[in-house]
Image (cartoon, rainbow, N blue to C red; front, side, top):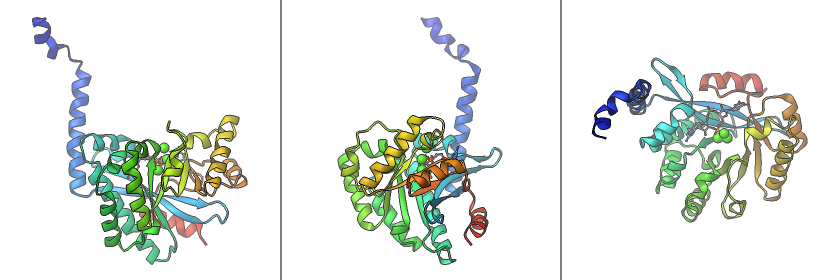
Length: 278
Ligand code: C2E
Ligand code: CA
Ligand code: CA
Ligand code: CA
């Protein structure tokens, strides 16, 4: 046993130490990026299926790493959550997104709204409505144009408190949507307790619409459920004309996906908007 302890370092696989060092370096760089406000926000259009107009953009964060290039959120959001930086990150995204949308509205993109993803950890912040209200005031954007995307699991973590917080946000005029709908494990009863405005059907169901009858059945059921509860319903991850047609025919209110446009930096979205809305 004694020996085992002494030899511990020796037997550590080298990959592990390397991974730890890499993580350590990532952590330091992420801190610096946040301090220097270096995160980027990309925008992906969401289309109203009846009018075929862009009604909203989803704000999706990106990190421009000095040597690794553009890093997707899946590669650094979990780290930010782990090391306690997610609140700061989330605030920066909210601030940038509101400022950008207000600017676009003033430049003529009338009625454009923005949806911003909230981490479950941000959701736990006691003063979130206060933070959001301040960001809205500072940006000059009206609350009705902001939608917050939360996941079922985030909402279910502290139901009592979350209902109060969501009501407070709702009273301010902010919209709430359930992201990745259909992938959580919670009961559906929260849908009537929570002040929700819309459901976003997870991409995994949309991609199977024409391959798997079960997926099509689930999508149809979610659309009907949303209509019955008077909620808006958005399909995520729409990639083909065939899927889009199906969603139009089944009265899905809105659609988002690579078929219309990938998440784009602001300048690229401006060009996309010019080409797609005249
Ligand atoms: P999400 O909220 O479900 O966002 C949709 C993801 O699907 C985005 O990936 C988007 O680029 C991708 N996507 C959109 N349309 C299509 C399509 O037609 N096909 C395929 N294959 N993919 C499509 P992204 O930007 O890498 O974001 C991944 C996740 O990271 C997001 O999933 C969200 O959970 C999280 N995230 C992004 N930005 C933020 C943020 O500012 N704060 C927090 N807390 N999470 C964020
Ligand atoms: Ca989302
Ligand atoms: Ca989603
Ligand atoms: Ca997702």
